[in-house]
Amino acid sequence: MIRPAPEWPLPSVFAHRCGGALAPENTLAGLRIAASMGVQAVEFDVMLSADGSPWLIHDETLERTTNGRGRVCDTPDRVLHSLDAGGYQHRAFAGEPLPTLEAAAACCRELGLMANIEIKPASGFEALTGEVVTRRILELWQGAPLPLVSSFSQIALETARRLAPKLPIGYLCVRVPADWLRRLDSLAAFSLHCAASELDDSIRDAANAVGIPVLCYTVNDRQLAASLFERGVTSVFSDRIDLLTRM
Image 1 (cartoon, rainbow, N blue to C red):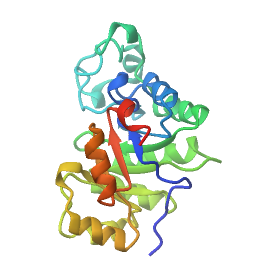
Image 2 (cartoon, one colour):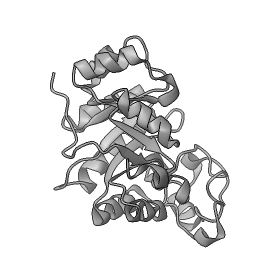
Image 3 (tube, helix red, strand yellow):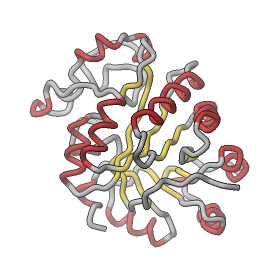
Image 4 (tube, one colour):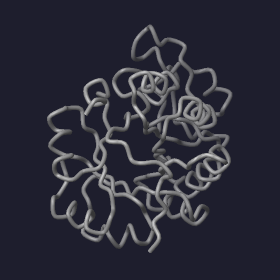
């Protein structure tokens, strides 16, 4: 089975939600800080607005990371454009906008950052989000190496694979299910992503034996990261890129 791989080597550390703990999550400020720290790759979440446009945000609601209120999927683009996505973390970031996928793609290409895009569908929008995000990725990264795409939604990933046979896909879970290899095979997935606390060495060995990289989240301790690399993990997602970038 051909498993499409990123056209770039997997780095040891991905900045979680753009810049980890050093910047407001899922913002262009985070991307710039990650690049300034020497990070080669970033991870961020993408969800659809009420207008069906892809935006960088993790939660289905706006309250935790912006000054907005309500569900992202019920909020039109004109409102999302007006929100402050930085002030909640520190006044130095006040006025930081909520970015579109288009803005994030341009920033990644400008800064030379590789990306893992997590498709984050609101409940009931799994197939649509997978379709819209995949089509936009193919447009925005045209002529450049494609990002790695992951999701907790099997439907979103199935949609992505149908639309983009060459797209590198990461199968994302908390605890790896017993039938993980069948699921990866059904998607022609390139990599296996799981919670660091749930990593089973027998599964890691089986994945490595068939050439499937194992990536773990969210690793914010240097000693834990070193232990995971010793156990055969390829990459970790971290909020503390200041501690892990020189490993």
